[in-house]
Image (cartoon, rainbow, N blue to C red):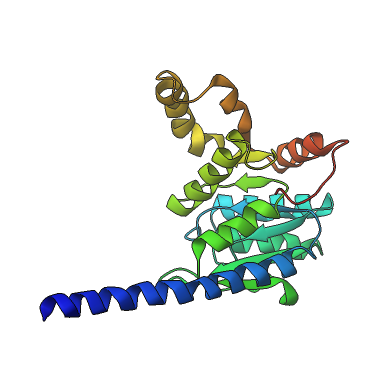
Length: 228
């Protein structure tokens, strides 16, 4: 009897998994339709926990404003902290301000600086990540936590393995990123787990001018289009 109940429960799980495919498909279709209508954009990542009076919050506002003034839209994860700062900078510049929101139990809520028609909601992290990579012409990565690192290394891996075309990946705040980059060079590279050329996939910046210069230099003479 217990064995039969166990098998019945397992079959129900498998059935639920199958039906989840349609929900996942719906998120992809909705995301592709909305994002494909938006022009060239740069994604800004960073901690949701960064306070408005923190230096990196204001830096993210200034960077997003400068990127918007250079003709790019801004995409963020739609929440508070650095995400809010990115949308806020785009809003101040009158630029495109996109939020890819996801429901989280503690820290995620929509920020007020996203364009009304460019706020998208996701249940699945992996669908949301596809939208970031597919529709971004650059990643600006501010100081953050695990989620920020997840987005960073996802993009590096896809470019390294030629699954997508290259785009600028800019780490902002050399003091914050120094320890990670030293470990990558002195441990990963020394062990032969990456190639020296892989380090070229990452750029460092400490000012809004440097960020815009890196993005503009990369796309000088190149076509801006979705990444895969």
